[in-house]
Amino acid sequence: MSAIDAIAAGRQRPFDRGDAKTLALSALGGALEFYDFVVFVFFTKILGVLFFPPDTAPWLAQLQVYGIFAAGYLARPLGGIVMAHFGDLVGRKRMFTLSVFLMSVPTLLIGLLPTYAQIGLLAPLLLLLLRVVQGIAVGGEVPGAWVFVAEHVPRGRVGFACASLTSGLTAGILIGSLLAAWINTHFSPEDVAGYAWRIPFLIGGVFGFVAVYLRRWLEETPVFAEMRERKLLARGLPVKQVLAHHGGSVALSMLATWMLTAAIVVVILMTPTLVQTSFQLPAALAFHGNSVATLALVIGCLVAGLAVDRFGAAVALLVGSLGLAASTYALYSHLSAGASAHFVAWYALAGFFTGVVAVVPAVMVAAFPAPIRFSGLSFSYNVAYAVFGGLTPPLIGYLSQSIGGLAPAHYVAMTCVIGIGVAVYLIKRPLPPL
Image 1 (spheres, rainbow, N blue to C red):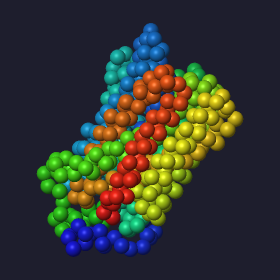
Image 2 (tube, one colour):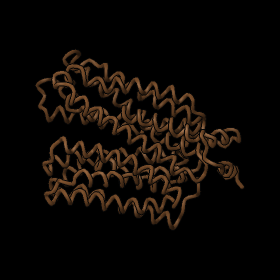
Image 3 (cartoon, rainbow, N blue to C red):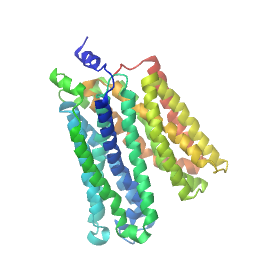
Image 4 (cartoon, rainbow, N blue to C red):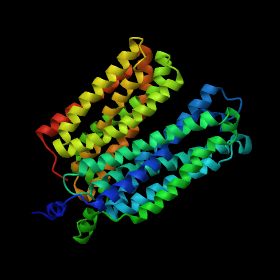
């Protein structure tokens, strides 16, 4: 038995209260950090008004703010690679805590930023800088969190561990959506423009520091601690080892991440806007459906994680991909037929099957050996998310104009075929147990 196999064998123990505490604190911190990252998108309209010259055309101001939002995604690979490098060399916990701190500071500062009327062009430049720091933070947070929880729990519970963290991340989206809806309901447009838009950023910054404090109570993962004791840590540049010796795992992880980005970006983030523009649904109904679908996603993630532990990642990915394709077609076909009476129910079903995204991290953490796991997962996930996450919105916009309202469903289904292909590959060539 190799030293790495001995470490894995040592994790064959029952799931205990310490594991539950670790998962709960990790999921809570992940929810607060992802809330900080996505709340920006719920206030793009007012940020476009406040942070650019008043004579800027509304569409141009909106485009510029979306560009600043996208900068956060483009910064993810840089943050992920750098933080993963140190996560593989000096410890998972340190980077896990640093990432939430790096997210909290810029979120709080965005809430305190002077506007264009106060400091001119410096305002959008500062907004861009803070958004880039947020992107660096989330690039290290998400892969680091998956590795952290996966290496803490016993064998046979990795699927649920990754799913609980993913569920927490999606809960952060729901919190941001609900808070944005509350602010726009309880404040006049003048008050929102005057000061109320700052509230969610200030709250996010404060909650982020709470998450930093809570993570003080977490311990280093047993896998990393034992690798350090046995002197099995990676040397040099872990990402160089990943690219030189684990190209197949990188490709597999990137393909699975492609499906993940399509599910989250199209079904959860873009659908509320698409159903308004393509099918003329009222905004209130669109965002009500989105809140219900996101809640269903939180539940779907947990179900998918339990399925991974019970039936294996390959089977869970296969069934989840089929369910996501079918439910997305059902949602958009229902709308294309001119019916909206059951929109919320169909959207909730699609949201539930979007929970297949929780299977993806379980695949990725098993695809890379422990000494370079953080770097391998982070490189694959962040590069794929930056590419596919950045290309998806304009591509869906173009396809919707050229081939009609079913375009989003066609795209999601295409990525589900990729997910099915990954699942079939894993059935024939199973990954080693974590």
